[in-house]
Length: 194
Image 1 (spheres, rainbow, N blue to C red):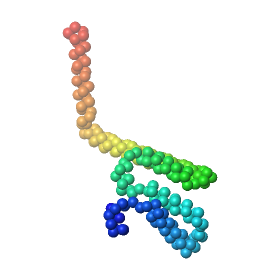
Image 2 (image 1 turned 90 degrees about the vertical axis):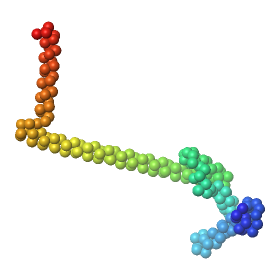
Image 3 (image 1 turned 60 degrees about the vertical axis):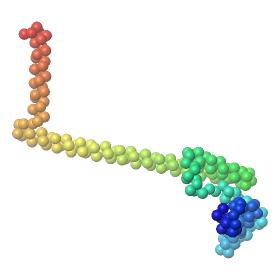
Image 4 (image 1 turned 180 degrees about the vertical axis):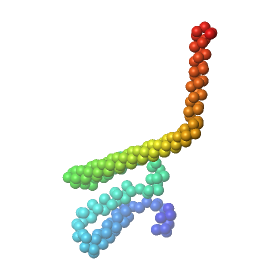
């Protein structure tokens, strides 16, 4: 309603008629062609080509969406959305292009899809390699840390051995003596209480 009020100065139907749509896109395309011809990039095309370009522009714009609305309402599976988009492109090509041009466009689209799959596969491989390298570095750091701790422990034991007192050796001796005492008791019980 706002656009209608702004553009026409009154409230009413905000949709454009077919003639208004045609004039809008025809003006855009003619303007583009004039700019191209003035810059020397393109020569003038015939009226049939102009008509086809206008139809194509109308179709393209009718299929275009607002990114904000897409984000708001189309939060579904991206694979599903990609599939829908490719089907729509295929249908548009079927309508607008002749059989030979359509076959060329399909081959071109297939090549592009293949390159995209290969690029995705290459990126995935690169990420997996980076992850393996990261894990390898972590294991290497862990080994170095354990090696450093082992050296420190060996230094402590060596220092204790010089004093003839090591915590580890003393605790092991007590454990061995406790096991021997327990074994001796069980042995006596088995011999009949001697």
